[in-house]
Image (cartoon, rainbow, N blue to C red; front, side, top):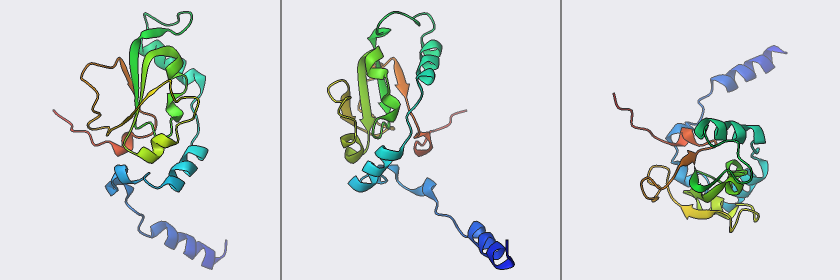
Length: 151
């Protein structure tokens, strides 16, 4: 690497980076073009992850034949375009896809529509009744959630 290239690389690394932690996550995915690109490129989760989730969340009930939890409800909070929903609608009696962005919710695959209750809501104030869920999942959005830590 030439001295000029090394100097340019060092300058780029030391340049101030945008502070996404200060960005309001409710405004990150309002643009339809941005949400469609996000939906197209975000990876999906492997089936083994869901199996692990079921075994640890409900050890006495897994595995069972057929949909294992027809009497239970799950919500995928900050669902975005639904990648973390995966097989949840097949396994739970009630499945809620919740996101703060209407544009993201519009990107939910057609195969999920009618199988999940789509709800506009914030992770901090979902609008879902207390004790109405048996499981809550969050794929890749915990960095957008502010949590009050109590001692």
